[in-house]
Length: 515
Image 1 (cartoon, rainbow, N blue to C red):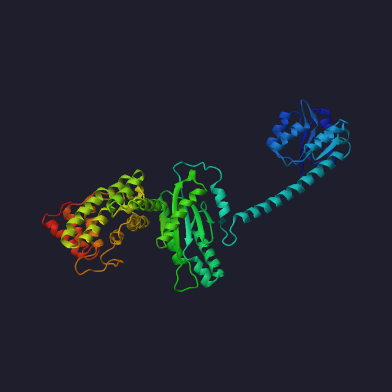
Image 2 (image 1 turned 30 degrees about the horizontal axis):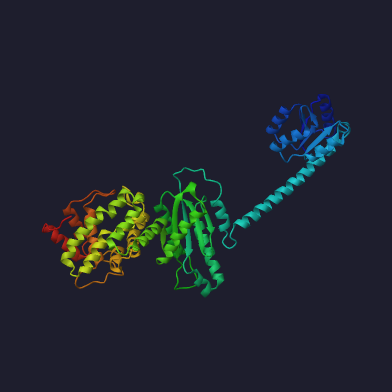
C-alpha cells in the first residue's frame, strides 16, 4: 500500500512518538499527521482527507466515542482504530459499538508491526466497502433512471414529472413564468388499429425525438400518457409559448411520416403559462383543459388556458337565455373585465361600437333583410371579442408584430366566433366574426358570392379596416379620412370587396358617413 495517510491523535506525546516510530518502522513512507488536542484534530479533519485515523480512547475531557461523532460529520467513511492502555472490556465494546474498525492495546501498538497490519487491513476493508458503495450507487442511479424514464421514448415519465412539480419550492424571480405545454396526437388510436401497434410505437418515438430536438437543455419533456407529451419550459409571455407550440405543431405535420399516403400526422396542443414559483401537479390541469379545447374545436390546433376561460364564461352567459345576445356577450366581457388591459377593453368597447355604427350605415344601403342587418351589427360590435383570450402585452406592442406574433393575434377571429357560438349566437353572426379578416381575393367557407350583396364578413372587413385606420394604435398613428379611403381603394378587389369599398367611398364623398 503506497502513500497511506494517517491521522494520529494522542495527548501523551511520549506514547505518540512511540506509535509514530512503530508505524514508520513497519512502513517507512507512511504519512502520519500527529495532533494532541481535540481542536487540532478537528482542524486537521477539515483541512485534509485521510486513509485511516488512529486515536487514543481517552483524550480528556473527551473519549474516543465522542470524537468519532466529530469524524462522522467531516469524513464519515474513513476507518478508525482505537488504542488504549485500559484492560477493561467495556472500553473495547464501547469503541466497537461506535463504529470503530479495530481496537489495539497501547502495548501492542508500539510493538513490532501489529498496529501497521491492523491499519493496513482497515484501509483495505474500507476501500472494498467504498468500491461496493460506488457500484451500488451506480446501480441505484440506473434503477432510478429506469423508474423515471418511459421505456419506449426515453423521455421522463409521468411519475417523475409529477414528483418534480410537487417538489421543493422554486427559488426564482417571482416574475418568472413557465409554460406547460400538453401535446396530444390526433386520432392516434386509428394508427394502431389500421397500421398496427408497431407503427404506433414508431410514431411515438419519432414525435418524442422531434420534441427533444426542439427544446432547450433546461426544459423538461415527459411522456404523460398513451399519446400525450408534456413539455415544461420557461417562457416570457403566453404569446411566446403559443408561437413555440404552434411551430411544434407545424413541424409534427411536416416532418413526421407514417405509412399512409392519405393521412397526415397532426397534434392538438394546450398551453398554460404560470408563475414559476407556483407550479405544482395541479397546474398541468390548465394545459390539459386547453388541449381538450383544441381537440373539441377541430384538432390540429394550439389553444391556451385563457381561451378555455373565455369559452367557459360564454357558456355561463348562455344560461341567461332570457337576455338578448348583445347582453349575454356583455356579460362575458364583464366577467373577465378585471383581467383585461386597456387595449383589450378598447377593442371590445369603443372600437367595436364605432365599427358597428359604420356597418349599420353601409348595411342600410346594401342589405334588405332585417335579420341579416341584425346579425351583421351584432358581429360588428363584438368582432374583436376573441382578443379577451389573448394578452394585453402583445396587443399593446409599439412595433410591428413578428410573423409568429401575427399568427397568435390572428387567432382572435376564430376564438371570437367560438365565444359567440358558446353564448348562443346564431351561426351566421358567428361565421361573420370568424371570417371577417378573410381577403376578398381568397376563398372562405362562407364566401359564396351573392348576386344581391357581398357576404356579411366582407362588409365587416372593410368597415373594420376603415375605422382602425382612423384610430391611434400602439404601433401606428391615425390616418386622415382621405388617406383611409385611398388605402381602401388601393386594396379594392384584393383585400376588400369592391362593392363595399365603393359604398364607403360614395358615402364619404357625399359627407353622409358618420364615425
